[in-house]
Image (cartoon, rainbow, N blue to C red; front, side):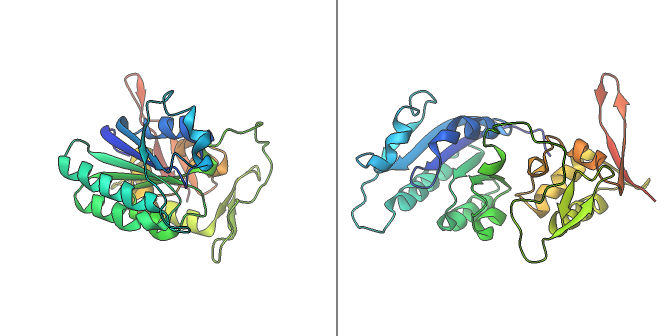
Length: 255
């Protein structure tokens, strides 16, 4: 993944996001840049928005009022999209983070990418794939939710099971299971990252994984780094590559 940092606009759909994860959301965005614009959209006359009211000042979020004129229609979507286009044309940021699980933002994400800007999404695992794939990076809220206790090193299945996404690869200790889709993503990313010596930098593999699947996240498997995940796969081996005080680990496939 690139080390470049962006000025990012965080746009939150208050009707479709979780107030309790606001802190974790901002921390996640900070990995990629500085949140210079922070806005949340919703009908602030509604009780639905009460959970946000104590947090917006604490995290310097600008609340945008949008009345719901028609029952069953979400006017927040339109307001957020219009604001996003205004910000896009102002050229005041290099990236956007759309916080929602709503597929209505798929077109917006595509439009931002067409302009060559970074676009990130944060939402639940129920988020439609079309929106997820339209982002450069998509983080599931389940991976940033505070964990009540340390996860034990026992075999566990991923939370989301889909067709052709059944468990496949297990590590030496029997504590890691990858879905077919995720293992295929990792393998493809490795193959396009290797050099003439058939090894690849972990950072390059990570960047290519995100290009193939913006939602891939090592935290889904209990690891906070790609290096740790690869270290727990039989098919791959991590090679230390120290340059001065820095380590730029490499990966090779075990023959």
